[in-house]
Length: 237
Image (cartoon, rainbow, N blue to C red; front, side):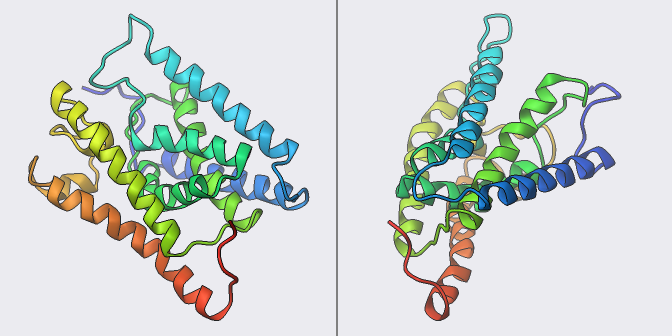
C-alpha cells in the first residue's frame, strides 16, 4: 500500500509540477535565444553538466548496495538514456544525437510526464530528481528546436528508429532475464496506470508497443514534412 502522501498522477501536485516545468523551459529557451552561437555556448554547457551531475548523483544513489535491485534500479529506461543524450546534444550538437533527442523526447518520453512512474512525495529528493531529469529531456528538445534550429526529415526519423531498434535489442533480453520492465518491454506493469496497460498481456503486447513507438515518432515527423515543403530549409547537418 502506498503512503498517504505518495505522489499520484492527475492530481493538483502533478498539474502544478507540469506547469512549473513548462515555465522553466520557457525561461531557459528565452535566455538561450539571447546567446545563440554557431557552437555550444557556455550556457548550454552549464546546463549539460548540471544535468549530468544530477543524473550520476540520482542513479548512483540507487546503485548503492542497500538500494540496488537489478529489476528496478538500473538506469535502462528510455528516459534515463535520453537524458544523457540531451546533455550530449548541448555539448556537441551532433546531428544524429539531435535526431534521437527530438523523436524520443516528444514521441516517447512525454509518457513519463503524463503518467510518471513515481510514488515519492514532494519532500523527497527523489521527487525533485525525477522531475529535473525528465523535465531536462523536454527542455533540451524544445531548446534545440527553438534556439538551435533543429529540423527533421526522413533521415532523422530513420536515425531515431534505428536507435530505438538497438535499444529494444539490448533491453528486451535484459527484461526477460531479470523479469524486469525497462522500456515497458517486460511482463510487469508500471507503478501507475499507463497506456501500456491497454495493449494487452505480455509478450503479445510487444507486437503493438514496437510499431506504436515507430508510429508515434512518425506523427512527430509529419508536421516537418509539410512545413519543409512550403516553408523550411533542409535539415542542418
